[in-house]
Length: 173
Ligand SMILES: *[C@@H]1O[C@H](CO)[C@@H](O)[C@H](O)[C@H]1NC(C)=O
Ligand SMILES: *[C@@H]1O[C@H](CO)[C@@H](O)[C@H](O)[C@H]1NC(C)=O
Ligand SMILES: [Zn+2]
Ligand SMILES: [Zn+2]
Image (cartoon, rainbow, N blue to C red):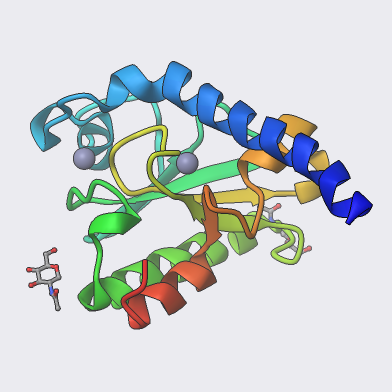
């Protein structure tokens, strides 16, 4: 009993920290963001540079995160606009799998250790951009405390790509 209570306060602080971080830092960006004005749509269609696109195919692009949490921190975003994981369903399993595999191949092409990588999605409302984006970060060991919390798996604000795929298959996102 005592142990549980001791955990409750740090846990509550952590949740508050995450919540405040996102609602304050990014809350404004999330209002009334139509796909036409969407920053990531413009990046995905090469209308805005930087960032330089590191990889591109018909379906998605990969580029370096503006605020890298480690030496290697990339985002894979689909060319088609989706607000977040929440709007996806079973029909998008293939897309998410291809984005995940694409991110892995991309990191491998840079000789980045996949065992030491974090590959996953933020879950609304904890998203920095209202356009689906997959994070690929390595090595984990370089991440500071704030980033370890921000990209913590499993949590209700961040989901591994594998968990996201499983959830989509079972329609319980
Ligand atoms: C899945 O979402 C798409 C829109 O992205 C929609 O057209 C389709 O009907 C949905 N399918 C199911 C099974 O809900
Ligand atoms: C990755 O490693 C291979 C073999 O060690 C090397 O030939 C290649 O140049 C490396 N690639 C990068 C991007 O560092
Ligand atoms: Zn968009
Ligand atoms: Zn994110």
